[in-house]
Structure formats: structure tokens, C-alpha cells
Image (tube, rainbow, N blue to C red; front, side, top):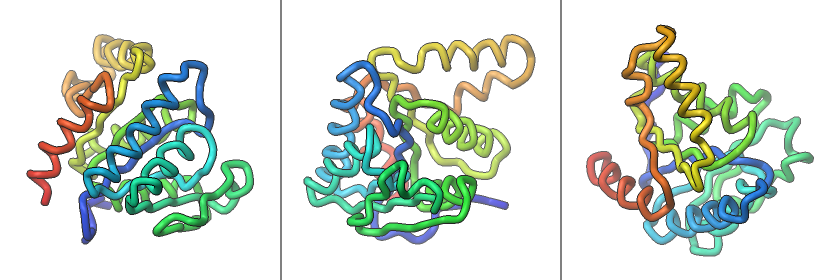
Length: 193
């Protein structure tokens, strides 16, 4: 299986993030800023179709700015993640794996905001697929207030202990804030479209 970018009318950004707001208000602000930034640049949001936590904040901010939104949610999460049915595109899948595949296949880049086990699962799958050559999409990690530092230390441990080449770390682009993310995405967009 090769995951390539399908035909899209505009630059699409897959955002993985928490279904909760987290303890630091800076996470919620970053999610809102990210959604607003996507809309301002005319970029499509691809995400997990929830209307709670950081997911909901990204989507509502993108919608408020007139942005295109593409949400994918498995049937079993529609109630607990409050499926956001007023998106530009709302897709219901049977499984979590199908959800992740549809999200990644419909995006040009991946952006990971703070989140929990689900966000880590999505990040690891995108990273693993990149390592295996199933896609070549940039993966941005928004390290708001150093949230992802323990994860990055774990990756270094994996590399140091010989379970991955150092190139694994090179597949991730670490950015400290939404402004830096925006500048990087502008560069990526110009090479994609």
C-alpha cells in the first residue's frame, strides 16, 4: 500500500490533537490559533471530526474563519467525541484504522498538537508509515510549552538503543508555536501546489 496525496482542491493539513483541552490553557489557545491560521491561509483542515477538546477548538476556529473542514470519525466515537456533523465534509468509518488512513490520505502534511494516547497513536502510525516509505508527507510536532519533550526523549532513547536509525528523528519537524508552524507550512505549500 502506498499512501499518496489524492486530488485535492487546496492544500490540506491533517491535525492530530486531544479530545480534551489539557491542563495548560496554552494548548487550547494553540488549537484555536491553528484553526484560525488554516482558514486565513485558505488551507483545508483534515481532522478526527470531534467537537470536544482541542479537536473541537481547531474545527470551530477554522469554520469561524470560513475554512474548509474535512472530518473523519468512526461510528463508535460519534457520541463520546460529539461528532461535528456541520463540517464541509463529514465521513463516518467503521474502524479507527480506517479513520487514520482516510485522514492521512486526504492531507498534504501532518500537524500534531498536544494530546493523549489517541494523538500518540496517530503520530506513531504516521511516523512508522513514513519510516517504511508508505508516504513522504512532512510531520510537524507543535511542541507548545515543551509538551512533547518526553516523547522526543523517548525517540532519542529508541535510536540510542539501536531500535531505529537516526533518520527516524529527521522525519519530524519540531516547531515551538503556531507562528513558526505557519512559516514552515507556507514553504511546504509552495512546493506542493
